[in-house]
Structure formats: C-alpha cells, structure tokens
Image (cartoon, rainbow, N blue to C red; front, side, top):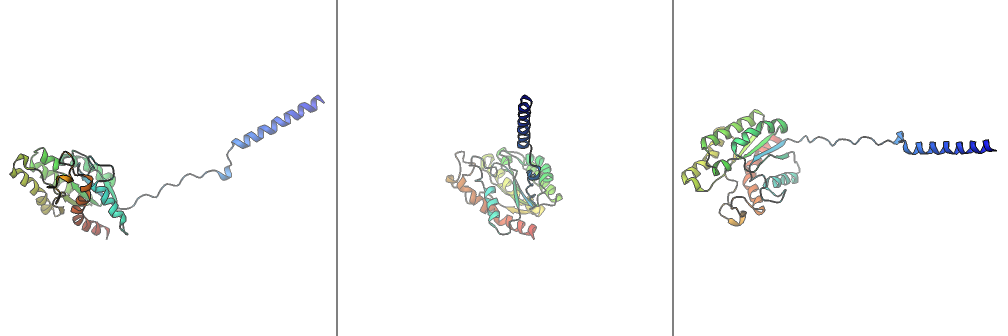
Length: 229
C-alpha cells in the first residue's frame, strides 16, 4: 500500500508539473504577430526655415501660422504635402545657411519657405551679408530640386530710416534676381496694431497668426500647385 500511495503522489506531482509548464509556455499556434510598421509618408515635403515668427515664440503650441498652414493643407481634398517646421527663435540668415544642408539632405523638400532676416536687421548686421546668405540658401534649395518662397520683413527705424528701407528692399531684390516667389511682408496689415503683438511689441499674438498665413498663402499656393501637378 505504501508503494501504491507513493506512486499516486508522484503521479499527481508529475501531472501538476505538466499543467504548469503548459500554462507558462506560449501557444505557438496563436503567437502574437509583430506589429506592422505604419506606411511611410510619401508626400512631398514643404520645409519652413524661419526664426521666432515661425517658431511659435510666446504662443501655445500648435497655434502658429505654420501649424495653421498645415491644417489648411489638410482640409484640402488633394492634400499632398507634409509640413516640416525647422524654425528656431533668434535665427539669422547665417544660422539658417549653416543648418540648411542637413535639412535638405534629411527631408528632401519639394518646396522651401525661407522666413529669415529679421534678426539680421534687429542686430544691425551688414545687409550685404544677409543678401549673400539669402542667395546661397536659394541656390542650395534649387540644387536640391526644391522651389523657394522668400518671405520679406520690415524692421523699426532704430538704425536709421535708410538702413530700414534698404533692409526691406533686399528681399524683393534677391527674389527678382533669383526669380523665386516672394511674399513682401509677413506682417502686412498688422505692424501698426499693437493689439496684435505680445508685450515685447515684436512677436505677434495668437490672434495675428491667421493674418500672417493669409499674407504668405497667395504667394505659396502657386508653388504648391506647380510642384503637385
């Protein structure tokens, strides 16, 4: 009887062990399949290279004019652009020129919006240097196969009216010389309205962003349509 009892115990333990192993071993017939990767975004890229005016300085995230542009494109039935905002507060044309090669290589944009120059003017940097940098950025974009829109800017006459007027003229002159699209002044219709600016009287408020987009859109839309066709 003792041997029979011990045999039953061993049998019970063996059965329990089999049950535990079965519980912890995966059911290979229903093993979870690896998650499928999301399809790559094959839309052409619209790259915005700007300063604080495009980098949402002092604004709630995703309320700036570049984000509004992305939303406007998304509402269109034939939205074929992915928007990349590579803007940095405080950026100058020299900084933009330095960063541009890597941006062109990484994103391969079809259209580039250059919204730079305000910080050159506010720092009183040489206008010939700004002109040279803008032209070099345009040349680099074209060499990479991208169309270009250059966005103009005005500055207060802190360094004299002559400097301020020559500063504003540079954008139009470069655009004509290089035959690229040109939005004359991103703050058109806003510059004299202090209610549209933050406390520093330099950076536009959230309320101003849609107007800024409207100042850029008529000059950008033809480029988008041309590249899409």
